[in-house]
Length: 348
Image (cartoon, rainbow, N blue to C red; front, side):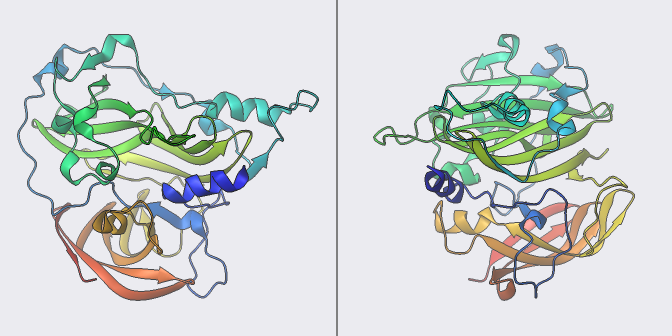
């Protein structure tokens, strides 16, 4: 059973990191510190200027109040990994950790109040909110066949920046299989001047509801800091992947956020809680998978070098292959201007 869960994890590109505290990356280390790995964005394209869209329908929606989500998700310190035994063994003793984890991760959960549940025919199609043509998830999901989704208005970041929540799912992607895969996603979308400025995945489930799979759950605190935790979980066993914090800047950009008590990676500098200056990043890179139109490729990681300014990438970034804890050949470059990705060029 454990092998099956590991296979599911591989297919959906969540690294099997087993550290909750971040460590510095050393390319000469024998073992890869996979908790240093961040996920590349789900959208792979040469970014065009944001288009004006009619978001006037948001004005009629009552915004939710902060905080949003289950604070216990953040307060509970998850073990690196767990295996509580067979859930079908009626004689085994159920521990407090098992009870807690099952309450938090027992099923995919997002804010789906019937008040905000709408049909695409009534409001907009998913392509109104997402760049579905270039979205990594388009490899397996036909967005045009998702006829129902949920939306909710989050509190405004400021007078000019609005925030929207979007949840959608697709059941039984491969119904011919004994244990078909299903996916569920929750997106936070930032809007400014009737243009989508940025977005981040708040929640996701990718796997089989019986066997388990990969989870992301989130909590948004009173200071509008977005907390995300990633896990692999199924049938009373799993492991913790990563804990990250994010901030919506006043310009609408979503960037990584670091508290003073966080263990700061020494592969770059942090100023005012944000990445600054030259950085070396290691990614679980979905761009490479999207380019090859595959869920699985031999090397999932890319090693990148570039510069941050107040949490946003600037100038040219270079992305290299990464195998056996060693930086390899140049794979592609990205160019940023005024905080926007303007070009992505694949070398290989």
